[in-house]
Amino acid sequence: MSMFFTNLVNGLAMGMVYFLTAAGMSIVMGVMGISNLAHGALYMVSAYVGWQVFKGFHGPFTLAVILGGLTGGLLGLLIERIFLRRLYKQPNEQVLLTYGFVYILTNLCLWIWQGWARMPFTAAALKPITIGGLRFASSRLLLIALGALFAVALWYLQDRTRLGARVRAGMDDKEMAQGMGVNMEMVSMLVFFIAAFVAGLSGVLGAQVMGINTEAGSTILVQALVVVIVGGVGSIQGALLGGLLIGLIDTFGKVLFPQLAMFTIYLAMVLILVVRPRGLLGRRG
Amino acid sequence: MTSAGTTGSHKAPWIWRALPLVLAAAVLVAMPGLLPTFMQRMMSKFLIFAIFSISYNVVAGYTGLISLGQAAYFGVGGYAAAVLMVRYGIDSLWVTALAGVTLGTIAAAAVGPIVLRVSGMYFLILTFAIGRLGYSLTWNLPFFNVPEGIQGIAGLPRPNPGIPGFQWTELSFYFFVLLVFALAMFLQYRLSRSPFGHSLQGIREGEMRMEALGYNVWLHKYLAFVIGGAFAALAGVLYVFMNRFIEPADLDIMRSFYPMAMVIIGGTATLWGPVVGAAAIVFVEYFSSILVPQRWPLILGSLFILAIMFARKGLAVYASDFWSKAGAKLWKR
Image 1 (cartoon, chains in turn green, blue):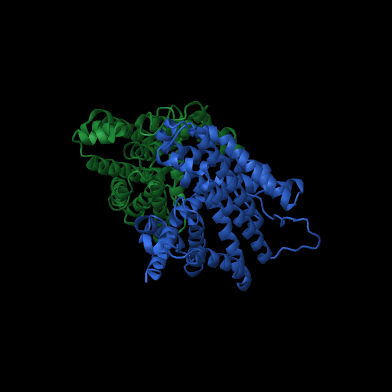
Image 2 (tube, chains in turn purple, orange):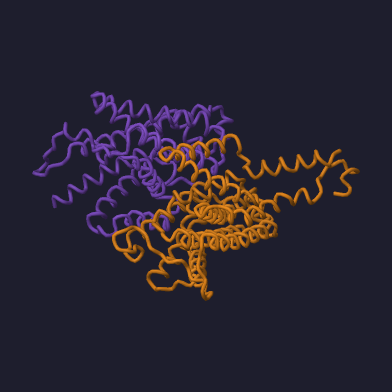
C-alpha cells in the first residue's frame, strides 16, 4: 500500500510538471493557432538558468524560479515578436522555424552548461515529510501544491478576467473579436509571454523531480504534445486532466509493466484519440 | 517561342529552359564516379532523402495536410526490410523492398481514417502521436531489437539483387538509388500534372469550394496520404539498405522534420523543391558536422530560420525565376 501512495505522489508531481508545460502550449495553439515546438526548449533553458542562480550563484530558490520563469517568458516573447508574428496562419513555416530554435537553444545550452546531467538541486535542503507513517519527498508534495495553485490561477485568468474573455473570444473567432475592438495583437503577445513564463517556471520546478540534461527540452516537448492531445487544444482544464492522467499512467505503467515502459502512455493516448479525436476536453476546431 | 517577338513576352527557347534539367542529370550521372567513396555515400543519402521529401511534398505541399509523422511510414518500410533480413534470413533486394513499400503503404492506409477525422492543428498533433506510437513499439518489443540489448536492428547485410557474381560498391549502390529516384521524380511529375493532382491542390486552396463542386474531398486526401506513405516507405527501405542499421528514432518526430525542412527550404509544392532542399540540408549538415563538430546544430538551426524569414518561396523557386529572367533578357535583344 505504501508503494501505491509513493507512486501516486510521484505520478501527480510529474503530472503537474506536464500540466504546467502543456497548459501554455495548448492555449497558444488555441488562441494564436501557433504550434510552438520551441516550448520545450524554453523549459530547458529556464531550468538551466534556475540551476545557475541556485547552485552557481547560491541565490535563493524563489529567485531561481522567478528568474527562470522570466528567462522563458522573455525568450518566448522575443521569438514571437521578431519571427512568429510574421508567420500567422502558416503552420508549416511555424513548425520549421520553432524547430530551428530547438536546434539552436539545445546547442547553446550544451555550450554554456556542458553535457553532464544535473540532479534535482534542492533535494539536499528539503527533509522528507511523514504522513501517516509514510515518508514523501517534500519537493514532490510542494510541486503538487504549486501545480494546483497555478491551475486555479490560470483557470481564473482564463474564465474570470477581461483578458481571459478576450482570449476565449479570440479562440472562437479572431476576426470578429478584432472587429469588436479587441486588440488581438496585444492579447496574443500577453498570452505568448504568460505561456512561455509558465513553461520557464515549470522548467525550474520540474528539474527538482526529473533533473536537467540537454535532452530535457525534446523530452518535455513530446510529453507536452501528448498532454495537449489527450486534454484537448485550448483548454486549461484539459491540460490539467491530461497532465495528471499522463503522469499517473507513466508512473504506474513503469511500475506495473516495466517491459512496456515507453508504450503505456502512447497506447492510452491513441485509445483516447480513437474515442475522442479532439481530446477529452477539446474545443471544437 | 517563335511568336515571342510579336506577343511581347520574351520566352527563352526550349534549349535554355531544358538546360538546368540536362545539367542536373549530367551532374547526377557523371559526378559521383569522380568522388571519393564517402561522398558517393553522401550522394546516395541525399537522393534517399529527396525521395522521402517527395512523400512530404505530396501530403503537405500539394494537398496541404501538415503532417508531423511522415517518418512513421519511412520507419515501417525500413523496419519491414530489416526484420525480413535478420529474423527470416530473406536478403533478396526485390522481396525486402516490395515488402517494405507494401507494409508502409498499408500502415498509411490504416492510419489515414484515424488522422483524417480531424484537420489543421489536430491533424498535425495526431500524425505526431501515431509516429510516437511506432517509436515506442519498436523501442519496447524485443522482436524489433537485434542483437539483444540495443534499441534498433544492427548488422544488416547488403540486399541481394539476385545477379550471380554481383558485388555492391558505394558507386553501384548510388546508381541503384539514382534509378529509383528518377522513377520517384517521374511519378511525382505525373501526379502533380494529373487531374487528381490538380484536385489535391484545389483542396489545399479551398476545401469547401471543392466539396461544393462535388469532389470527394475525404477520398482525395486519403489517397494523397496513402501515396505519401508509399514514397516514405520506399525511402525508408533504401535508407536501411544504405545505413544497414535502423533505430526507433527513425520513426520519430525528429526524423519527420527532415522532409519537412527540405520541402520548405527547397520550395513547397514544386517538382524540384524536395530535391534542392534535400541537397541543401544533407550537405550543410554533413560539412558543418565535419568543420564544427560541436556546433553544427547552430548552423542547421540558423539555416532553417534564415530560410523561413528570407527565402520563404524556396530555393528551387528563386533559382528557376532567376533562370527564366536571365533567359528572357538574353533573348530580348
